[in-house]
Length: 333
Image (cartoon, rainbow, N blue to C red; front, top):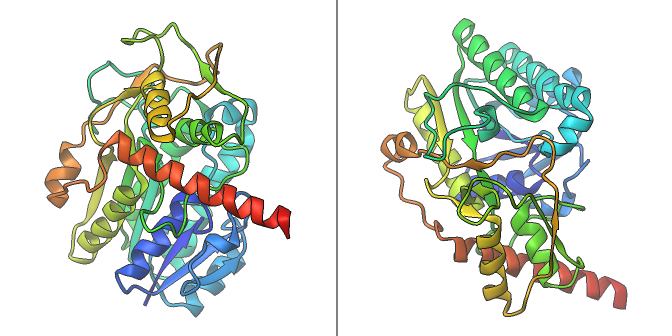
């Protein structure tokens, strides 16, 4: 029996594939390589180049590889892009999720772990937000994920599926062993952009909004190391196998850092200044989003291994230097 990782050639998905393989699981990756890279898929994973919106491909994969569980990480994630192209986000995130769940039901897949987002909460008070908070997403991205959660919950109520919905806060960092990292072209993630600026790949980092009601005027986010995040997924999958019926949990550390905090951390790690430019707020961006992670910690008896901003930044910067070295080697050859 195997675990299917959708989007397993992408940033978080490739880390997930490595995490499962390290735990001696059989792993199948489906990815259309729209933003991912085939080289980031571990060689021991079975790779299928295809789109999860293709029901015939899904049926073949689920049948041929005897898929026991699905960890669904494929999708579009950039909030401003979702505002500009909402129909594309609803199609990629919601319609394709429905296709995947339908195929899972038809093939008696027992476990389904879904990558959701803190964006389902929308504007929340400055204190950590719990899973009981009212859902009020402020962007098509957040709404596409909220609807996907509902589809999965309804399908699980009608069919024999045990599910977990994990609401990510801000994922950053890279594999501590240097095997994979955030390699998306034209990435928008703050720590990724700051590290690219630090190594000279970008001329500057834009700070979108300096008039928020936060200590330094810039937006505040709860950053979680990608290795801690995929560890959570592996542990949650084990709970589902042990009989847990359903899980809905925030994935964050419960503390926030501002944009300026991140810039300072990157400057300290890189031992050089990071050029910044002030810009207007972007559509759909939120002021402050910090997780109440008590449920996750209690459920898993979870103690993060990489829960320090300086460690997150150091690992992200190390991967950026790996990419820079590879790029220079290609240019020289």
